[in-house]
Image (cartoon, rainbow over all chains, first blue to last red; front, top):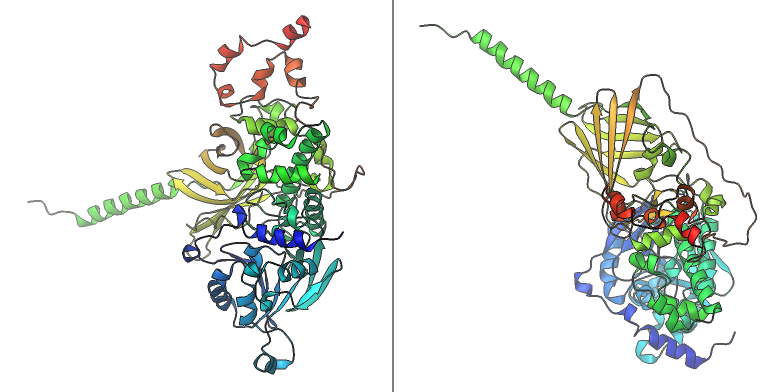
Length: 309
Length: 292
């Protein structure tokens, strides 16, 4: 599918002006750290959750929140480890997940050229993301474009990319056309932890970013993809742990509930659309009302769902 | 003048102190042991299970009612749902339990009370060492995070961090925002468990349930392995549920017992005895069928 530059530009512009991306009061937000497994942590602050994996090889993080949070994030990382920040993985292009790329990448140094590389060449931490993230970051309007140090230095374009770091295999898996068209979930195989980005969250309805290629079916496929990787300890508890893009630490039971909610609402809206109901009529009928009390205002979600069916 | 007998006084003080000590100890009742569920109350609901479309006596709101009406029991046939355990606020409702105290080996202080359910062999920990509940962004589980305190001889337990669960196993949801308060009262060989569910998402009023248990001297808990299998092949992503207004089983319970349909749909009012008076004026299914 061809994506015109005009659409990309307008979508990036829209991205930074959406109500959901209203900038928080950064001065009053602290980074809180939750240990997930032996060497895996979740950092909660402003924007998307950050996953931290650390060990003898250094530090790897998934997503970087906003630029304004970078100092606090670096302080939190320093509390956990004296190692160098080697890798940043971006789950997708949104500002609350890539905003700190430049600051954090510059504070780190990738594994390249020995211990002289940073001083000699100005090497930064490597940034890994799907190529769609690179495309959208590099073609953003000038006023919103982040500096090139914050662009992915290693973009993958196939279904997955593998990395071995701190003694464990890390699989980065593309989730096509879900939250955006460049989503990745990251599976830490030894630690048995999946970092999902915004294809899964616990605090709100999904944001189907149609301008950036998101669809409801992609969300459902991504939920299935996460579930397929998970092995619970017993019943629907424990085993593989899931760090969501926003919200609380989860496991398979939570992701199943999420998939169930998405499916039920998708089917209701599809039925209404098949019966010829307009979007306005669907919104008026509130087909998600039994979940709205838990996930909040559904209008943006239902609108995108209706339009991407 | 009579000289005071200090030896007698000392003995008296020691006696009184020892009484106080014993009383203080007994205030923290030992709940340890195997407790067998007494099924004389709500047996039909607890053992064979509730009827489809029976939400009577549950203080659910309209949103939970829609969740329940959309629920399809075939969901439980999917492999990923087959071994799903009952949440801690429900599990005790229909099975025996084992309670074990965990004490510091040196100080003998009570660190935690472990509670195991015979069904599904789920294990929950009630922390007694004064620790705080984790932050909201920590994981939620089927058992939740529980802390306990003694109110005299009653154990009061507060549980947060529960995953979404159910109040009745016919689709009536309990949200992951619920806070659960429990009371354990031992009366010799009998134990009374009271559970109060506060759910700001799906309940109009707190939901309160009691269960009774009898102490057993000769029962052992057994393992409860569960292995899921694919019993029916479906398309990937298949989730059975009913669209609004299309659940064919909703009237079955009301029709079978000729109870007003509205009375089976729950709500806070249906919990109270005076609802009977109100329900008398509601149309019965038999009368409605005769009209047709």
